[in-house]
Amino acid sequence: MTFLKRFGLVIFLILAVVGWVFLPWTGALGLAVLITLWLLLSRRGGQARSVAGVGISTLPQRLGSSAVIVVGIAGVVGVLVALLAMAEGYAETLTRSGSLDTAIVLRGASAAEVSSQLSRNDITLISQAPGVARTDKGEPLVSAETVVAANLPVKGGGKDEEGSVQFRGVGDEAFLVRPQVKVIEGRRFQPGLRELMVGKGAARQFDGLVVGKDIRLGNQVWTVVGIFASGDAMESELWADATVLADAFRRGSSRNSVTVRLTGPEAMAAFKESLTSNPQLKVDASTTLDFFAKQSEATSKTLRIIGTVVGAIMAVGAVFGALNTMFAAVATRAREIATLRAIGFPGLPVVVAVMLETMLLAALGGLIGGVVAYLLFNGHAASTMAAGSVGKLSFELKVSGQLLWEGLKWALAIGFIGGLFPAVRAASVPVTTALREL
Image (cartoon, rainbow, N blue to C red; front, side):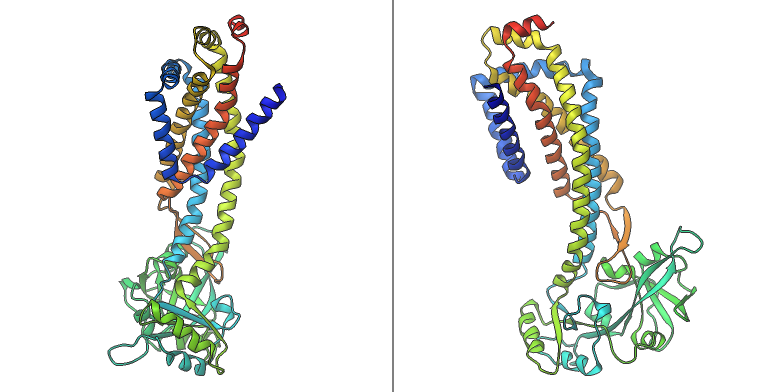
């Protein structure tokens, strides 16, 4: 019989945790309201409230043991939120790089710009497709671009430590297709000259990217003439005149990709259909939003998996800490709990009272961990190799409200697991046995 009770308790615990994981914040709020109403309006809820009040009032006397739960859970939540903030910031930076009214065209079956190659004839046909927006002069808003890799010394690295940066060749059309690109220092490069602009993210990562300074890329010397900001992945790149860059890196007249501004999001279907049905073209077209979202998917998923695994390992330790603390707390109050049960308090209020005490400590730990993670990591600059790219992507960690909610959910789950077994034991030990324990 004892085995069946324990087995049932484990099954209940598993179901409760699984349900909690998938519960949205609105569901959690509704659950909290129901529990509050039960505590305030029902007889047994009032009994649980009384028992919990006595236990919570003694927390200052058990400050050291209570801190074990709070600090342990705060550490779990802080690390979890910080790691997930990397995935959040990485994905958001790439997502901001795209929109529904711009499209990118690559050679068929190309997964990234660097593996694509489009001829001048391809570019002409793409610019004539329906749905392409035009300037006041009737010129198509089409930017044919070359993408190559370059190496630069990493800022703060060793003497010979270098990192890869994506070097993009563009024309004047690129600034019309991407109006979010703004020069924040210096000026734009001049066509036909070996001049380049650098994104502020790249300037933060690499040495020598200062306006007016000459740097060597490949076998050529280039002059930095400006720094630009765009609020997206382009900030991690270097930009120069497409023709000059193609000549310097021996790419000829071909280009890697074509970025197109459409007349509107609704024009994408006709634009793509026109390209795929043209027998002279073998290309793939997608909105830039879909393109960059797909690039971020694998890396973001990997970062989330790492964060979840690390958090789960730390959570195991926090659960054992909560179990030890609450078992000790229940043991010191065994006679008090037994007396309450002897005068008519049923087991349910005792279980709820112990759980309320544990969940309060868990919530406190979750809030502390979330606040610390937000203060230390929100907006913190980081960089990594971007999927589908030949250079590092500079991005900022983002501690969003959703991540803070996930951290709090983890904290409450740890508190629930750590408090359930001590609470059930407090309510199930025979009264006579409990009165003899102390």
